[in-house]
Length: 196
Image (cartoon, rainbow, N blue to C red; front, side, top):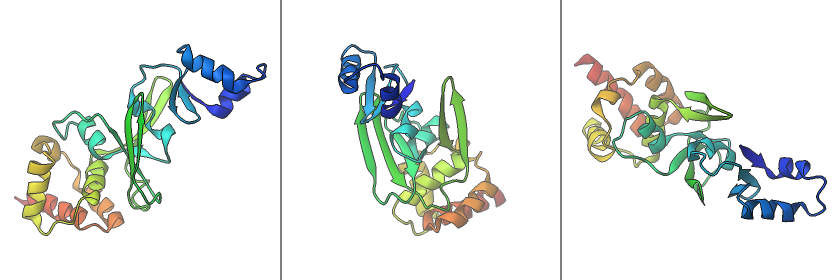
């Protein structure tokens, strides 16, 4: 269970030195620090369940979400998350794993996010379409459909069967929110594939 410093201190009202008690609980393996002021009671909690409490608002996207959907073959160890209006990329290295956070456009941010509940935890993750748009948004602008195809299937190694499940209507709606050459190229590429 995730525990925040304020909640933890409120539950330790009978202790005169709450910080000492927290330090003892960490030393005795009752609490595990995630980042300053945030703790976890279970050392085996999967990192993706902790991502939103570290830095937010945020949702899981980019490579981690693409791997979750089976769109890329690699196993992704860093939990990659999207934020907005934060201006710079953030990285946290914790005992639970590495977490990175980077901006997407604020208009695109709230769209196509799924809330998943798992036991006593919940987390938000981008849909497949959104995760791919988020990823393409972060890459250098491409010049044509051929470059996009190379980027998708050679560089990112997107699985073609999974790619064929993309909902073009969703990508088209999202493309209006990114103002991204790469996302616009993705729409054109999907339309061309559909008409082949």
